[in-house]
Length: 261
Image (cartoon, rainbow, N blue to C red; front, side, top):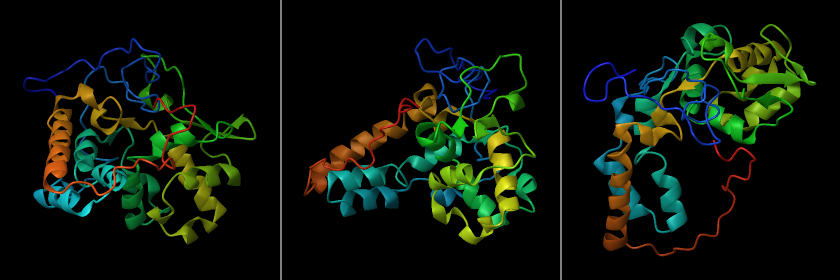
């Protein structure tokens, strides 16, 4: 929560639309953040990232002068040229120290990779996860503990809680929507390791700051970012025009029933 300055204790706002988080706030449905205030965490589950990730003149120059097609430009612009601002300002809280929670399950390099992919993991599970194995709560009471509002994982239509065995199909579903290179695949050959990993993933209330999700325009720091990208696109079209403006790639179109998150 921002506690000082012009934007201190800015109201996160109740959603008046059909889409909200489980607390009825103007946040993505997968975001378990119950704070009534604008949230900036600056870390992903206790893990900080170097300022060298911050968008630079070099990343903007590269985007402008190396992308020759509109599709390539659009995909590339999501990452180094502006994405780290969303990640490093928004962040996640309520997930504890991943080093402690995953100690004995993953090594530190793998934990760091997992934290990095938290940018997309809860969101992608909400959009593309198999409803028979993963779902997110539609409602959580404002007076309930934050820790009780989290993703729900199932095994054979029976709710799984920490300590239970997780099915191989659930693990496969979750891992499929993470990048396979976020850790050494051999780590998960052990079913015990699989279950311990999923016990953390499925019982953690992944609560993101606005900048990390679709509610990012509610954070004033959003507004220097995207107008900059708009200006950069105009400069690109003047300085080094696209060789191909065709938009013929439908592979990345979200076809999920949860495309609103």
